[in-house]
Structures are given as C-alpha cells and as structure tokens.
Length: 314
Image (cartoon, rainbow, N blue to C red):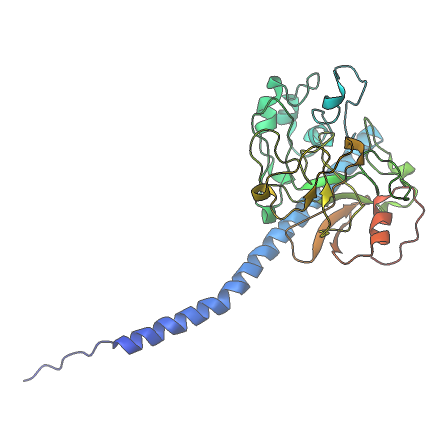
C-alpha cells in the first residue's frame, strides 16, 4: 500500500502569509501606540491632579502657596550675582510632606544650597510623580555640585511675561500665583481660581551632567520649576535662555535662543509630547487640556493672577 506524502507549503504560499501578517501588524501598530499614549496621557493627568491637591493641602496649612524660591539676591548665603538664581530651594522640595515623600523631605538640608554635597542624595532621588511618562520620566538629577538641578515635567505658573516678573514688550506683568521667596494666597488671585493656571507641563532636555541644558524644565532658575505665558503652548518660537542653550542633540524638540541680556528677561513656555497641546492644572484644582492653537492673549490672561482680563471660553 502506497503511503501518501504530506504536502508542505510552497514558497509562494509562505510569502503570502508573511505579507498578510506584515499588513496586519502595520494596521494594528498605530492603534497600539495610540492606546499606550492615551494611557501615558491619563497618567500625566492624574499626576497633575495629585499635585494640584498637594498644593491645596499646602495652602490649607501655610495659608499661601509654596515659594517659587527660598533664597534670592541679597539673602544670607548669596555670594555673588552669578549665583543668584540656580541653587535655591523652591516648591519642588517644599512639597515633600504633601506628596508622600516625608522621608525624602526630612533629608533635605535647607541651610545649604541644593547643589551642596549635603544635598546630593535628595537631589539624585527620582520622584516619579514629577515626571510625565510621555516624555520618558527624565527626572531627577545627577551629582553635580556646580549648578543645582531639579528635573521634571511639571512646573508652576510664573506669570505672563518673563522670569523677572517685569513688564516686557509693552505688556505689563499681571501678577502670578508663584513668586520669589513667597507666593500668593488664593485670596490674592483676583482673576479667579478657575481662570488662573497653577501648573503646566514642560519638556525636559536630554542634558548631560554639568551646565549644559537648563531650558524649559525644572532645573532652570529659582530652582527653576517655572513657566511663563509669553508664548503659547508648544510654540515654534524659541524659549529664551540668557546663559546658554543645550547642545543641538540635547534639545529634545525644544527651540532655544540665547541672546544677550540677563536672567530676569528669560522666559520658558509650556511644552509637552502630547499631540495638540499641553495639560495644565488650574488654581481650583481642575485639570484641563489646552490646545496649541489657543489665542495668545487668552493664554497670557490665564497666566496672570490679577490682570483683570475677560477670557471667555478656552
């Protein structure tokens, strides 16, 4: 009796199957990527909610928001004009007890600058709540005792003009929830808590240790966790860094200019890796998604605390 030989796949049949699989992967991959980004965006939103709640808890206890910076020019411990902004404690460290980081907070030496060797351990600690996974969670800081570095994707509202909170380009400074040394209480935000930004997202640059990339992220100025409303979210125009911009390979999609000037004239806009805009938390604790196409005057109005602007819908 003859045994019938089993017939295998031909080369053409195998190629057809492989082609079908490739087409299916090509169709499914964008959907998978979109689902992953949606999950990351939701996580970022939830983290902003937590930070907004933490700010309110801090305010309930201190009757004001945490300071933008603890030390400033002329304060004890400041030794020269070139060290005026970079080595200070700020809201990032002050929030420790309110974000379930009491042990980390207890180890901070507030009598020394954050660049001091005594603060190496706390400066290196990565706090996941401060990093948005869409941007790769590039926080926190390496051990550099030359310049202080706090890194993260959420920053506080420093007002509508510049880092010096001064008039700029014919635009008056309209107040801000956060400032030097101390910050506002909610009662001072006369524009209304639902019409004033508390925090927003930024992109962190792909920096290397040392002074090489403090742009649009927590590590710039006053301990630096700030943004300004001078430019609309994810603006194609460049952020203004007085001292130095990161190397081209470290920009991570951020546009940076470094003209002559001084630290008070610099400004950093809100940026994110989300498609179409940035997530923000208002002073009333509500989290909103703000489109890149928002009107500039409306955006600037959202960053003032006492500007008196009539905003309408946003």
